[in-house]
Amino acid sequence: MARYEELTVNELTLNKMVAGSDVGSTSTIRFKFPAGFLGKVIETGTFQSTADGGVTLTSDNDRPNSFLADDSGANIAASVRNVLARTLLTYDQSGGSIRSVMGQLKMISGVDLGTGVYTGVQGYLEWVASNSVDAGGKVSAIDASIEVADGATLTVDASGLLAGVKIELTAGGGGTATVTQTGDCAALWIDTAGTITDWKVGIDINDITTGIDIGACTTGINISGANTTGILFGSYTPDSGGSSGAALLRAGTYTVPLTESTNYQGGIFRMYLETSGVSSYNKGAFICLKTTGAKGIHGVCSLVEVLAQSVAGPTSVYAGQFVAHLNSATAKIASSGALPELVGIWTKITSEVGSTIAASTVACALWVDNQLNGTVSGEEYGIFATCGGSKVDAFIGFETTSSGWTNLFYFDETAYDQDPVGTATVSGGTADKYLKVSLNGTAYGIQLYAI
Image 1 (cartoon, helix red, strand yellow):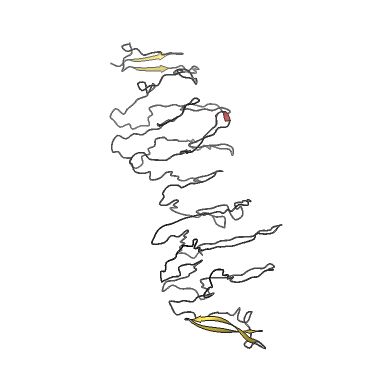
Image 2 (cartoon, rainbow, N blue to C red):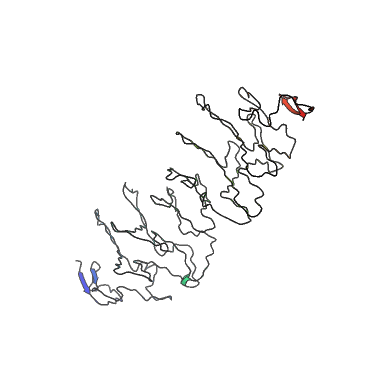
C-alpha cells in the first residue's frame, strides 16, 4: 500500500535512498517549503567546472532525475503538464537575466564532441505505431508561446527584442571567439532522418507584417540542393499604388533606391544557368502577364537614369542589352528549318481571329522612340546598326507567311511633309549611287541622287 508523507522543512539533504527502508517503492513524497523560503530547494552536487562535482552519469545511472507520468489508460480532457517551472515576477526587472528553465551543457577545455547528439535542451515526440493528428490538433516537439493579456498592450522599444525563439552564437564573457565552419553549421537546421516522408513545409509563416527580415550578411538566401521550385508565390494582392507600391520582389524604391559606390561589377539580379539537354528549350528568365481588365500591362520594363553630376558621366547607358554568343570555336547551332536560330532579340505581336484593336491604336512589333531634348554633340539615330564579323546579307531581311507588307515605309499625316521626305524632283542632282535590294535572289538598285 502506498505511503504518503508530507515534510515541511527549511533545508533537506538526501544522501542515499536505502532499499528496504520505511519509504516503499510506491510511496509518494512531497516536499513543501514555507512561503518566502530562500534556500536551494533541490540541488545535486555543487556548481563547478571540474569532474565529480555533481551526480555521476553512467550507462547504469543515465537519468538521475526523472519525472515519469502517464495517462493511466484514459483520456485526459484537461490542460496538464508533467513538469511545470513557473517563475512569477511581481516587480519591474532590469539589469539581470531571468530564465524559468535553463538547460546547459558545458564542455571544459580540450573536450571535443564526436558522433552522437549533444544539446542543451531537447524536445522529443515519439509515436510507437501508426497514429494521426486530427483536424484542429497542434503538435510540436517544442512550443514557444508569448501571451499578452486580453485588452493589454505590450510595447517593444526600438532597441528592444521580443522573439518567439532566439538563436544566438556567442563568445563567452562578451569577448571574441572563432567557429571554423567547414561542416554544416546553421542557426536553424531542418532535416529528416531515416526513410521517412520529407517535411511538406520547412518554415510556415502566417499573418505577419514581414515574413523574413535579413540583416547584414554575406549571402541572404542560399539554395544549394536540388529544387523543383526555388521560391513559389501562391497569391498576390497589391495593397498600395505608385512606383513604390506592392511587389512580389522588391529591392529599394524609386525614391529610396539601393546604393553602391564600388568600382566592381554589380547588379540587382545576376543569374547563371548552364544546360546540357538535347531537346526542348530553356528560358533564362520568363514572365507571363495576363489581364481580364482594363488596366495596362507591360511584360518587362527597364528604366536607367543618369542623374545630375558634377563630373564626367558614365561611359555607357543601356536600357537593355541582349547578346546571343557562340562562345567557342566548336560551338554549333543546328538548323530547324522553321525559325531563325541565332537571334539577339525577337519582338513579336500576335492576336487570335476575332480579337480587335481600336482604330486610334498603333500596333507595332518594335517601337523606336527618340526623345533627346538636351545637346547632342555626337550622332543620334533611331536605329544604329554595326557589324564586325562576316559580311551581312542585308540590313533587314523580309520573310512572310501571310500577305506581306503594304508599304516599305509609311509616313503618316504628321511626317509626310517633313524631313527626310523631299520634293518630287531633284533639282540638279546626279544619279550616281543606288541602294542594293534583293528580290527573291535578284539584285535591284534604288537610285540615289547627289543633291
